[in-house]
Image (tube, rainbow, N blue to C red):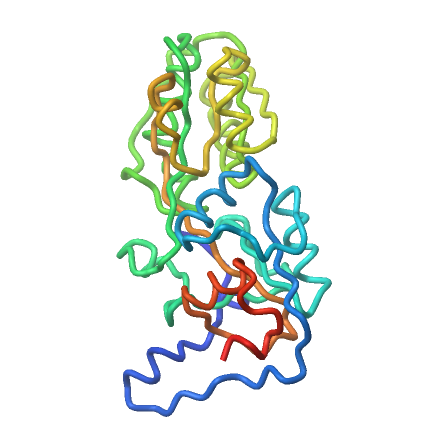
Amino acid sequence: MDRKKAAVLSVILCAFLAGCGAETKNPDLSSMGEVVVISREEGSGTRDEFARLVKTEGTGIKEIAASTEEMIEKVSEDRNAIGYVAYSSISDEDDLKVIAVDGVSISEKTLEKGQYALCRNYYLAYSGELSAVEEDFLSYILSAGQDIVGQYCMAVKQPGTFLSDRSGGEIMINGSSSMAPIIQDLAEDYMTYNPNAEIAIQITDSTTGLTAAIYGECGFAMSSRELKEYEEELLTKNMIGTDAVVVVVNVENPIDNISGLQLKGLYDGQYKMWSDIY
């Protein structure tokens, strides 16, 4: 996985050091103020998966970010902010800090071994039968396209050879903003195999995309969350990769690690001030 994010993902593994016999000291948060807890909007797959994994009701949320880009902007501008984004969406140009969860930092190794606490899957879902060009595109994603998927997150298969049938037609894709950069790169590469295809991508959120697929308003839905029971009954899903939700804070925040219970406490409103978490 070609992440190129060493500068952003360099965190102090406090729990690891403690296990090696080093004395663990909590960071001094006395200079920090009231925690600004930021969440994604309703319908966001990243929000749903974060809530499911952290087991939070979200009663402590102070601000809403309507997109990944807005979340990054809000956290970058507020030294007291905390938020979360898809691992695949982070770059070393972002002015924020990714922190470890329960002493485990996000990396290719911890993602592949399932050691990082906030892992989640990416799906393409559809209703009914696929058109020839949609079937061809999906076959590409699950073969040669896995090389591109692996540049963003963990691929589900080894990249394989792909021979397009060059079916013509338009493919409409709707849904998750976290998945959108991956699907955009896949679409561009696929059209070098099949110049007869036209692919349009509408970036909304997982729930909007899945609803559009159910009503036949798009060919594929991008979902960065697990499908609900009624969605499972109405749609066919294909997992294309595994990513993670990473916790981000402002670069001026001295914290480098947070426990799952502390994270839940912040998002449930149990802790008001940064200094309250210790």
